[in-house]
Image 1 (cartoon, protein in one colour):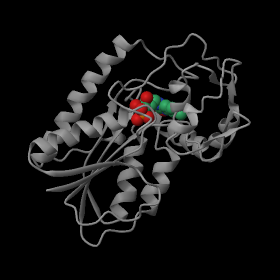
Image 2 (cartoon, rainbow, N blue to C red; image 1 turned 90 degrees about the vertical axis):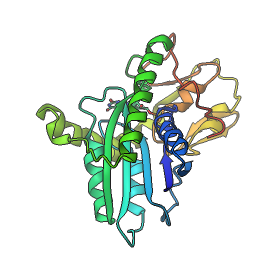
Image 3 (cartoon, rainbow, N blue to C red; image 1 turned 120 degrees about the vertical axis):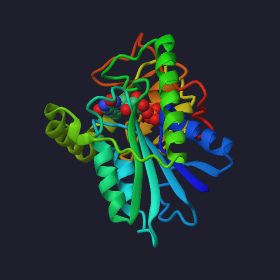
Length: 265
Ligand SMILES: Cc1cc2nc3c(=O)[nH]c(=O)nc-3n(C[C@H](O)[C@H](O)[C@H](O)COP(=O)(O)O)c2cc1C
Protein backbone atom coordinates (compact mmCIF):
# COMPACT_ATOMS: atom_id res chain seq x y z
CA UNK A 1 0.00 0.00 0.00
CA UNK A 2 0.96 3.61 -0.52
CA UNK A 3 0.22 5.57 2.64
CA UNK A 4 0.35 9.31 3.34
CA UNK A 5 0.28 10.57 6.94
CA UNK A 6 -0.33 14.17 8.09
CA UNK A 7 -0.10 15.63 11.57
CA UNK A 8 -0.35 18.91 13.39
CA UNK A 9 1.30 19.12 16.77
CA UNK A 10 2.22 21.54 19.51
CA UNK A 11 4.36 19.39 21.76
CA UNK A 12 4.88 16.22 19.73
CA UNK A 13 2.06 13.97 20.99
CA UNK A 14 0.14 13.83 17.73
CA UNK A 15 3.38 13.34 15.79
CA UNK A 16 4.35 10.49 18.15
CA UNK A 17 1.14 8.50 17.68
CA UNK A 18 1.23 8.92 13.90
CA UNK A 19 4.94 8.19 13.66
CA UNK A 20 4.31 5.00 15.64
CA UNK A 21 1.71 4.02 13.03
CA UNK A 22 4.28 4.85 10.34
CA UNK A 23 6.75 2.44 11.92
CA UNK A 24 4.19 -0.38 12.00
CA UNK A 25 3.16 0.25 8.38
CA UNK A 26 6.80 0.43 7.21
CA UNK A 27 7.76 -2.74 9.05
CA UNK A 28 4.90 -4.49 7.27
CA UNK A 29 6.47 -3.46 3.94
CA UNK A 30 4.23 -0.56 3.01
CA UNK A 31 5.40 2.65 1.38
CA UNK A 32 4.74 5.39 3.95
CA UNK A 33 5.35 9.11 3.96
CA UNK A 34 4.71 11.30 6.99
CA UNK A 35 4.69 15.09 7.02
CA UNK A 36 3.47 18.04 8.98
CA UNK A 37 0.13 19.37 7.82
CA UNK A 38 0.47 22.08 5.19
CA UNK A 39 -2.62 24.33 5.27
CA UNK A 40 -2.11 25.07 1.54
CA UNK A 41 -2.32 21.39 0.55
CA UNK A 42 -5.57 20.83 -1.29
CA UNK A 43 -5.06 17.36 -2.75
CA UNK A 44 -3.48 14.09 -1.68
CA UNK A 45 -3.42 11.83 -4.70
CA UNK A 46 -2.43 8.34 -5.74
CA UNK A 47 -2.48 6.69 -2.31
CA UNK A 48 -4.35 3.76 -0.82
CA UNK A 49 -4.63 5.17 2.67
CA UNK A 50 -4.40 8.58 4.36
CA UNK A 51 -3.93 8.99 8.12
CA UNK A 52 -4.21 12.14 10.23
CA UNK A 53 -3.31 12.92 13.84
CA UNK A 54 -4.21 16.12 15.67
CA UNK A 55 -4.52 17.37 19.25
CA UNK A 56 -7.87 18.09 20.89
CA UNK A 57 -8.21 21.80 21.61
CA UNK A 58 -11.18 22.96 23.71
CA UNK A 59 -12.97 19.59 23.44
CA UNK A 60 -12.78 19.47 19.65
CA UNK A 61 -10.84 20.17 16.54
CA UNK A 62 -8.28 22.98 16.33
CA UNK A 63 -9.24 25.74 13.88
CA UNK A 64 -6.29 25.01 11.56
CA UNK A 65 -7.43 21.39 11.15
CA UNK A 66 -11.03 22.28 10.50
CA UNK A 67 -9.96 24.75 7.80
CA UNK A 68 -7.55 22.22 6.28
CA UNK A 69 -10.08 19.38 6.12
CA UNK A 70 -12.77 21.67 4.75
CA UNK A 71 -10.46 22.99 2.02
CA UNK A 72 -9.30 19.55 0.82
CA UNK A 73 -10.63 18.80 -2.67
CA UNK A 74 -13.10 15.95 -2.98
CA UNK A 75 -11.47 12.65 -3.92
CA UNK A 76 -12.31 11.21 -7.36
CA UNK A 77 -12.69 7.68 -6.06
CA UNK A 78 -13.44 6.40 -2.55
CA UNK A 79 -10.42 7.28 -0.38
CA UNK A 80 -9.64 5.26 2.73
CA UNK A 81 -8.87 7.54 5.66
CA UNK A 82 -8.18 7.14 9.37
CA UNK A 83 -7.65 9.75 12.01
CA UNK A 84 -6.47 9.92 15.57
CA UNK A 85 -6.87 12.72 18.09
CA UNK A 86 -4.61 13.02 21.10
CA UNK A 87 -6.06 14.49 24.29
CA UNK A 88 -5.01 15.18 27.85
CA UNK A 89 -8.20 13.53 28.99
CA UNK A 90 -9.63 11.29 26.30
CA UNK A 91 -12.98 11.10 28.13
CA UNK A 92 -15.31 13.66 26.68
CA UNK A 93 -12.88 14.79 24.00
CA UNK A 94 -14.33 13.03 20.98
CA UNK A 95 -16.19 15.88 19.31
CA UNK A 96 -13.48 16.28 16.66
CA UNK A 97 -13.89 12.68 15.54
CA UNK A 98 -17.56 13.32 14.79
CA UNK A 99 -16.89 16.53 12.88
CA UNK A 100 -13.84 15.07 11.10
CA UNK A 101 -15.81 12.04 9.91
CA UNK A 102 -18.66 14.23 8.65
CA UNK A 103 -16.35 16.51 6.65
CA UNK A 104 -14.33 13.65 5.18
CA UNK A 105 -17.40 11.64 4.20
CA UNK A 106 -18.60 14.63 2.16
CA UNK A 107 -15.24 14.52 0.33
CA UNK A 108 -15.81 10.94 -0.83
CA UNK A 109 -13.76 9.41 1.99
CA UNK A 110 -14.31 6.09 3.62
CA UNK A 111 -13.38 6.71 7.25
CA UNK A 112 -12.17 3.30 8.36
CA UNK A 113 -10.82 4.14 11.81
CA UNK A 114 -10.98 6.99 14.31
CA UNK A 115 -9.97 7.23 17.93
CA UNK A 116 -8.94 9.55 20.76
CA UNK A 117 -5.72 8.58 22.53
CA UNK A 118 -4.80 9.89 25.93
CA UNK A 119 -1.37 11.56 25.86
CA UNK A 120 0.24 14.01 28.30
CA UNK A 121 -1.72 17.21 28.81
CA UNK A 122 0.18 20.21 27.42
CA UNK A 123 -2.28 23.01 28.26
CA UNK A 124 0.13 24.67 30.62
CA UNK A 125 -1.63 27.93 31.53
CA UNK A 126 -4.78 26.46 32.98
CA UNK A 127 -3.99 22.87 33.93
CA UNK A 128 -1.36 20.82 35.68
CA UNK A 129 1.57 19.49 33.70
CA UNK A 130 2.55 16.17 35.23
CA UNK A 131 6.10 15.13 36.08
CA UNK A 132 8.06 13.51 33.24
CA UNK A 133 7.90 10.15 35.07
CA UNK A 134 4.12 10.16 35.00
CA UNK A 135 4.02 11.47 31.45
CA UNK A 136 6.36 8.69 30.31
CA UNK A 137 3.84 6.10 31.51
CA UNK A 138 1.06 7.91 29.64
CA UNK A 139 3.17 8.07 26.46
CA UNK A 140 3.95 4.35 26.66
CA UNK A 141 0.26 3.50 26.85
CA UNK A 142 -0.45 5.91 23.96
CA UNK A 143 2.24 4.30 21.83
CA UNK A 144 0.81 0.84 22.54
CA UNK A 145 -2.64 2.03 21.48
CA UNK A 146 -1.17 3.55 18.29
CA UNK A 147 0.52 0.24 17.43
CA UNK A 148 -2.79 -1.53 17.97
CA UNK A 149 -4.61 0.93 15.71
CA UNK A 150 -2.03 0.49 12.94
CA UNK A 151 -2.21 -3.31 13.27
CA UNK A 152 -6.04 -3.20 13.22
CA UNK A 153 -5.95 -1.11 10.05
CA UNK A 154 -3.58 -3.56 8.36
CA UNK A 155 -5.95 -6.37 9.38
CA UNK A 156 -8.86 -4.50 7.74
CA UNK A 157 -10.54 -3.93 11.10
CA UNK A 158 -12.84 -0.93 11.12
CA UNK A 159 -13.53 0.93 14.33
CA UNK A 160 -15.00 4.40 14.71
CA UNK A 161 -14.90 6.37 17.93
CA UNK A 162 -18.49 6.43 19.10
CA UNK A 163 -19.08 10.02 20.14
CA UNK A 164 -22.76 9.28 20.75
CA UNK A 165 -21.70 7.14 23.70
CA UNK A 166 -20.12 10.13 25.46
CA UNK A 167 -21.95 11.37 28.56
CA UNK A 168 -24.64 13.93 27.72
CA UNK A 169 -23.07 16.61 29.91
CA UNK A 170 -20.03 16.71 27.62
CA UNK A 171 -21.81 16.97 24.32
CA UNK A 172 -23.64 20.30 24.02
CA UNK A 173 -21.26 22.29 26.25
CA UNK A 174 -18.28 20.82 24.35
CA UNK A 175 -19.69 21.96 21.06
CA UNK A 176 -20.38 25.48 22.31
CA UNK A 177 -16.96 25.78 23.99
CA UNK A 178 -15.17 24.56 20.86
CA UNK A 179 -17.05 27.02 18.62
CA UNK A 180 -16.36 29.90 21.05
CA UNK A 181 -12.70 28.92 21.32
CA UNK A 182 -12.15 28.78 17.56
CA UNK A 183 -14.13 31.87 16.66
CA UNK A 184 -13.45 34.22 19.57
CA UNK A 185 -11.03 32.65 22.05
CA UNK A 186 -8.10 32.42 19.66
CA UNK A 187 -8.31 36.12 18.80
CA UNK A 188 -8.30 37.15 22.46
CA UNK A 189 -5.78 34.63 23.73
CA UNK A 190 -3.00 35.68 21.32
CA UNK A 191 -2.83 38.99 23.18
CA UNK A 192 -2.69 37.30 26.58
CA UNK A 193 0.85 35.97 26.06
CA UNK A 194 3.14 37.94 28.36
CA UNK A 195 6.84 37.83 29.17
CA UNK A 196 8.69 37.68 32.45
CA UNK A 197 11.72 39.96 32.63
CA UNK A 198 13.95 36.88 32.14
CA UNK A 199 13.17 36.88 28.38
CA UNK A 200 16.52 37.44 26.64
CA UNK A 201 15.08 37.69 23.13
CA UNK A 202 16.71 34.44 21.94
CA UNK A 203 13.87 33.95 19.42
CA UNK A 204 13.58 30.19 19.89
CA UNK A 205 9.82 30.56 20.39
CA UNK A 206 9.55 32.24 16.96
CA UNK A 207 11.76 29.62 15.28
CA UNK A 208 9.78 26.75 16.78
CA UNK A 209 6.23 28.05 16.27
CA UNK A 210 4.48 25.50 14.01
CA UNK A 211 2.19 28.11 12.47
CA UNK A 212 4.80 30.86 12.07
CA UNK A 213 2.69 33.08 14.30
CA UNK A 214 5.51 34.65 16.34
CA UNK A 215 7.56 37.60 15.08
CA UNK A 216 10.43 39.16 16.98
CA UNK A 217 9.69 42.88 17.39
CA UNK A 218 12.39 44.97 19.09
CA UNK A 219 13.96 41.76 20.34
CA UNK A 220 10.77 40.40 21.93
CA UNK A 221 8.21 37.89 20.63
CA UNK A 222 4.86 39.09 19.38
CA UNK A 223 1.98 36.68 18.63
CA UNK A 224 -0.28 37.11 15.60
CA UNK A 225 -3.87 36.09 14.91
CA UNK A 226 -2.83 32.80 13.24
CA UNK A 227 -1.73 31.47 16.67
CA UNK A 228 -3.48 28.17 17.44
CA UNK A 229 -2.63 28.18 21.17
CA UNK A 230 -0.64 24.95 20.74
CA UNK A 231 1.61 25.95 23.69
CA UNK A 232 4.88 25.03 22.03
CA UNK A 233 6.27 28.50 22.72
CA UNK A 234 5.66 28.32 26.46
CA UNK A 235 6.94 24.75 26.66
CA UNK A 236 10.12 25.34 24.65
CA UNK A 237 11.27 28.70 26.06
CA UNK A 238 14.72 27.99 27.57
CA UNK A 239 14.27 30.82 30.09
CA UNK A 240 10.70 29.76 30.97
CA UNK A 241 9.81 33.41 30.35
CA UNK A 242 6.43 33.08 28.62
CA UNK A 243 3.10 32.97 30.40
CA UNK A 244 -0.48 33.66 29.55
CA UNK A 245 -2.23 36.27 31.59
CA UNK A 246 -3.63 35.80 34.22
CA UNK A 247 -2.07 32.35 34.74
CA UNK A 248 1.49 32.18 36.02
CA UNK A 249 3.78 29.52 34.59
CA UNK A 250 6.43 30.04 37.26
CA UNK A 251 7.51 26.77 38.86
CA UNK A 252 5.28 24.68 36.59
CA UNK A 253 6.57 21.55 34.87
CA UNK A 254 7.22 21.85 31.15
CA UNK A 255 6.33 19.18 28.58
CA UNK A 256 7.66 18.14 25.18
CA UNK A 257 7.36 14.60 23.83
CA UNK A 258 10.95 13.30 24.31
CA UNK A 259 11.46 11.92 20.76
CA UNK A 260 10.04 15.02 19.09
CA UNK A 261 12.32 17.75 17.78
CA UNK A 262 10.23 20.94 17.64
CA UNK A 263 12.99 22.90 15.89
CA UNK A 264 13.07 20.45 12.98
CA UNK A 265 9.28 20.18 12.66
C1 LIG B 1 -5.46 25.15 23.93
C2 LIG B 1 -5.54 23.72 24.36
C3 LIG B 1 -6.78 23.16 24.64
C4 LIG B 1 -6.87 21.83 25.05
N1 LIG B 1 -8.10 21.31 25.29
C5 LIG B 1 -8.22 20.02 25.65
C6 LIG B 1 -9.51 19.44 25.88
O1 LIG B 1 -10.54 20.08 25.71
N2 LIG B 1 -9.57 18.15 26.27
C7 LIG B 1 -8.43 17.40 26.44
O2 LIG B 1 -8.56 16.23 26.79
N3 LIG B 1 -7.19 17.92 26.23
C8 LIG B 1 -7.06 19.20 25.84
N4 LIG B 1 -5.82 19.74 25.62
C9 LIG B 1 -4.62 18.88 25.77
C10 LIG B 1 -4.12 18.36 24.42
O3 LIG B 1 -5.19 17.92 23.63
C11 LIG B 1 -3.14 17.21 24.59
O4 LIG B 1 -2.12 17.50 25.46
C12 LIG B 1 -2.60 16.79 23.21
O5 LIG B 1 -2.08 15.49 23.29
C13 LIG B 1 -1.51 17.72 22.71
O6 LIG B 1 -1.04 17.20 21.50
P1 LIG B 1 0.16 17.82 20.68
O7 LIG B 1 1.41 17.63 21.51
O8 LIG B 1 0.19 17.01 19.44
O9 LIG B 1 -0.16 19.24 20.42
C14 LIG B 1 -5.70 21.04 25.21
C15 LIG B 1 -4.45 21.62 24.92
C16 LIG B 1 -4.38 22.94 24.51
C17 LIG B 1 -3.02 23.52 24.21
